Length: 476
Image 1 (cartoon, rainbow, N blue to C red):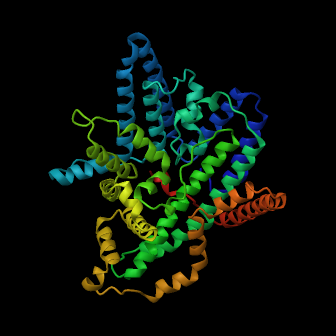
Image 2 (tube, rainbow, N blue to C red):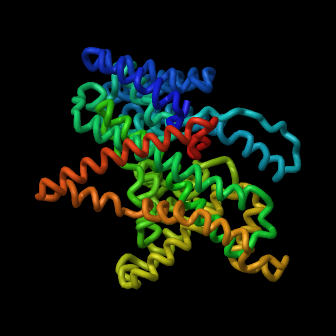
């Protein structure tokens, strides 16, 4: 089941909200969320819900063993349990997500013909596996209390707003809210508005941007013009942002409606002035996971800064998919993080603002080109195109009429997309909410309400004839 679907919006969600509202007490409300979460996950993949349930049972048991070991042996107790937990979680992720990729590359390296396993990857396995790992590590470090009731841990790992494509919610973020939360009218209102904004990002912006991208990148790009390649990869960068941040908005909004306060996952990353800042604003839950749980890993007997940096960015890329382009993508950004660390924050601050924005946007846009092309031959052609070398090698044009026609036809969509990717609306919202003028405040709230109703209507109309609205990050 997907969020950007009329059945979810007008049947599944209202029915869930009705049952949730009728339930008395947190325990009953939690049961409602568990039931609907399992239905949500099993809707398209009923078999893999068993894997999700295994993960919840196993990691809940690991948490109990960590506490049991600590009681028996003191502060160092539970090391065996946490090791077992991390190994099993990662093993499941490797088997279901990376086994085919690893066997293919093993065959290429050795010349053997080991049968390549054809395993369908369970949706959301990267997200709920990382949440499970973060939980057992936090239990081992005694930064959260071990959850002794299985039903509450099941709710944490299976909660449908963030189950499929994040954000990666730490147990510490909702630890208290699982057992004791208050649902306020303001939370429900703000959550509903956030859900509508997320749907609008996906249906009105991301889907239309991707339709343009596929007309250019959905075929051999050998003859694509230089500026046509730049035009398309810029739109693809915007598409990825709106598709993924739209999902995060819906997840965060749904969480608010049910009384949970998830951390933000995107903070207008294209407004960054350094690549380091970009990754502080982009997919924040993944970046913080690697920072808090991987940078502390001792390499070769001691903590080595740059080896750990390589490991983090290798894993960041590889987490996104079993393909070499994702590994290159992660290391590509890691290289620029390394460059900025060597330059130093003081020197970077002295760069002119215009230079910093040009530098970051070029790096980000080229990076998303690497992200798009899983075919390494096409990835190489992409670099030939954007560098202009294709003009010399195969006579590719600098510009072409088709690109110009597409730009003119979609200029409004592009302008709105660029505007919405920047922190313009949040500043307007802050101005309205902080205004001492009652007229400005009232007008702002009414405008926001009317605007969201109009957006929901537009989304609903566009979804009538749409058969699939899968989010990009479902595949990760």
